Amino acid sequence: MNYEKKFSKVAKTAKASIIRELLKVASEPETISFGGGVPDPETFPREELGEIAAKIVKEEYKITLQYGPTEGDNELKNAYINLLKKHEGIEGVSPENMLITVGSQQALQLIGLALLDEDSYCAVGKPVYLGAVSAFRQMFPKFMEIPLEDDGMNVDILEEKLEELVTKGEIDKFKFVYVVPTFQNPAGVTMSLEKRKKLINLAHKYDFLILEDDPYGSLRFEGEPIPSIYSLDPERTVLLNTFSKILCPGLRIGIIVASKDLLRKLTILKQGVDLCTPSLTQRLAARYLQAHDRIEQLKPTLELYKSKKDTMLKALEEEFGDMQGVSWTRPEGGLFIWLTFPEWVDTMEMFEEAKKNKVLYVPGEAFYVNEVEKNHMRLSFCLPSHEEIKEGIRRLRKVAENYVNA
Ligand code: PMP
Image 1: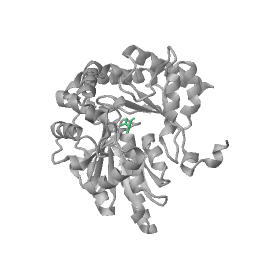
Image 2: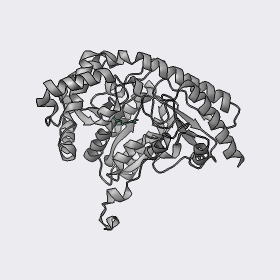
Image 3: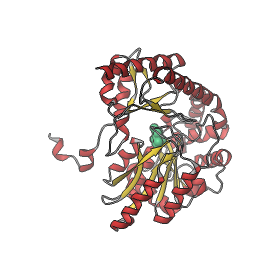
Image 4: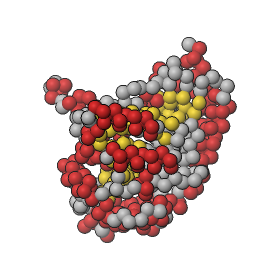
């Protein structure tokens, strides 16, 4: 059977995720991986989740083993509303403002389906979280790549590009700006309050939505929290959240907080995708959150991540401090550091050398849409031990030297 002849345009243009391919090699012994952005499994409350799971399968089987409403489990929605109130200071969200999805990845897909056509525009960071691009790409929109700076997206360049659309008479085709404003994936940087406000002003002026993807906001280990864009303007903002980084990704639970009009459409679209998010994992998360203040519980984990981040920064200073043209970000939370080499370096080419030396990273080119930059790499610090971080950065220096001198 020649499937090539049968495949749709979406299937033909879909690309495998470099990160997922890379994770396959990560399991080789002695390899130190700074690759995947996965949380430490030791932080998963497995004993308790196991107990709750057994109980809810037995006692709540009419819900947990049954189809549920497409909108999601109200018990979970209310538990999340409490978390938003207590830890984010966000009031006034009701269950009707929420849709529970299969991870925030599904939220991205549904939003793409709901808002994008082939002639639509959306703006994303440069670099950008590649899962979002894979989701939006299915609708073949035009991507505007907006450079990312140490304090978030360059909103002046965004404004210039929007003005160009006005001039071309195409501003009505501009749908949304996608941002990960806090501890961005891949760069680890956070958008300043000024830029958040400016983005909101632009959203009003040019009539677009802000898609605020916030999986890492609760993983702050130092510095002062900055209000979420959603809290500053709930009308214009669609907030995406997930339990993947604060509880465990295997639950596959994401949350969209948005206006009812948008949610109604997203719910209908979701019915065509999967009918509903699994009832079992939703109730499991709900019962867990009702019994525990998860954000409070995360504090020791955040201490651990902070110390690992400090170890990595120190190791980078020691190993790369004297290397011309090399710089890196200094995140106050999240999981990632973004390492930049001189422009002529190609971290994908360097990857073969890295594999030989048993150290892995994600080549930066995975995080660009059209205007690819090849001289960066994403380093995740949460999984390896302190010793492995030091040794891994030492190996990376050797890799870089061999590459530069080759
Ligand atoms: N958005 C961003 C910025 C992410 O980093 C991730 C996970 N790596 C996701 C969305 C998807 O998360 P989920 O597990 O909820 O699908």
